[in-house]
Length: 332
Image (tube, rainbow, N blue to C red; front, side, top):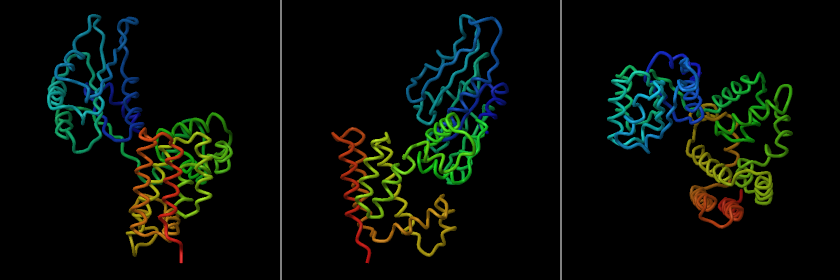
């Protein structure tokens, strides 16, 4: 686990680089580094100070101020988040700082790992930085493993049906999934299965954005609208519904253009379970490329409106659902 590595490395290196795009995992790694720092003796005045800043908000010279010796002689940790967004002057300063770290200062840098500002990563590693990787979780099986690990932290277990129901109910965002695991661990007993998840959410497992998307993409207007109204009633964020609609349309396009491949091969390529590929192929009946384009445009408009450009998120979503259903040709 990245957090375990963070604790081990925090006492070994003055420069620690945490690389990854998964915000939750990166945040946990940063927390583990800070918590793993040795606390000097001497009372409150000598407790390690923590400076937490975003690289995009730094200007030249600010890092020097943050790493300047304290009047009380206390050690400090400087956390620079999103180093890939730093301007050229700050990138240079970070590299220079890492190469000659002041005594008593630990520098923690987070970076998405992409090509943006990649030379900075190279410079930090040349400065003998300790690197902690937080790999992106993309595949369905990886999310299942993540849920198992989250539940294990609380001494709980779930069967495969429970894990699938949890993903259906909550979505794929790791922060939301982790929160859901905490809630289930605190409020339920025994092995967590699909029935436990459905009962706990009192209908949310059946009325999430994904359920709305499924009914709309299948051409079932009445059921899609009913699911939409119930999802909004139980507190599902409108942006999660537009996200589910967009993802459903995008998945239809991906599966629809991949002809001649078996379910298992396509599932591995797209990072989803084979049963999901079979389900999407069933939904594809009645859809054309032009229909998908119209549906995608409707969702994009609804997404903009629910994020502040429209007066009513509910109205924007209902209109999008109606356009999606109308864009699907009747089966012959």
